[in-house]
Amino acid sequence: MSDPIVSCDWLAARIDDPAIVVLDASWHMPGSGRDPAADFAAAHVPGATLFDIDEVRDHGNPLPHMLPDPSDFAVAARRLGVSTGSTIVVYDTVGVFSAPRAWWSFRAMGHDAVFVLDGGLPRWIAEGHPVETGWAAPPHGDFKAHFRAELVANLESVSAAIAAGSPQILDARPAGRFTGEVAEPRANLRSGHMPGAKNVPFSALVANGALVSAGAARDILTAAAADIDAPTIASCGSGISAAVVALALARLGRWDTAVYDGSWTEWGGRADAAVVTGP
Image (cartoon, rainbow, N blue to C red; front, side, top):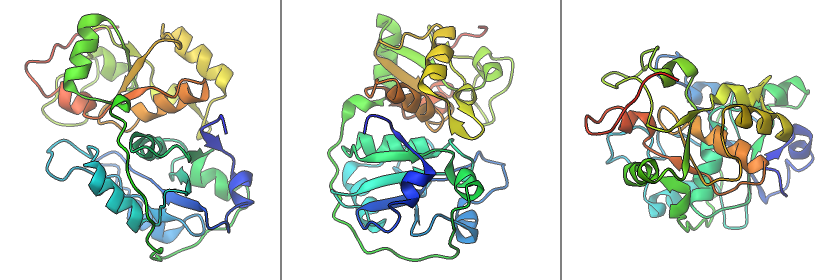
């Protein structure tokens, strides 16, 4: 499949296929008042398990939900029922928000057969598909991780990109946070953006809870002065919505976008990292 998105009808037709693993990768901003675990227990796609982004992380790193060591990720994936031959479908309860983070995480760990459910759980329900409640533990899988370092950007690679002018940096935060006119939601972070970065708010790439079409994504990226044919690092507040940009670029045939895992939580929290304000 050349599209990283699958429709609800596509999944519904295969929901009983043991090779399909469905993961609820819901995550919400701090202070939202929403609990992904409680939402999952109340309603989820039949057979799904919860991919807890705040749990499947590097617990020794003070930054939020950083990718864990590949061996630790593999253990977590096996517990979720994922095997090397699994086709994974990830979704979230917003539509398309945090599911792309799980999509990117599996790709960074070497698993290509992973897709995002178009419109997430809201569209699944709106189209009349059934849901389940409660919890069920899946049988363990045999997933093995093969880390792709080229899909993960860090402080050093972002600094090098700024110095060299390539790869381009696309920042998925809202415009006000990018320009520095709006304070960051996390404490002790400076406002503004990395030198040379371009703003592509992830919300512009989502319409009615679903990723926009390839044509619309191309228009949005072009309007932001992004070069679709250029190597790209996607960044955001903490590495969640940056994956929406990576997903949109994959829909346009660019599967090589790196996500800056620490994103603005790391960059904006360091006194030695250059920050600029304004457009």
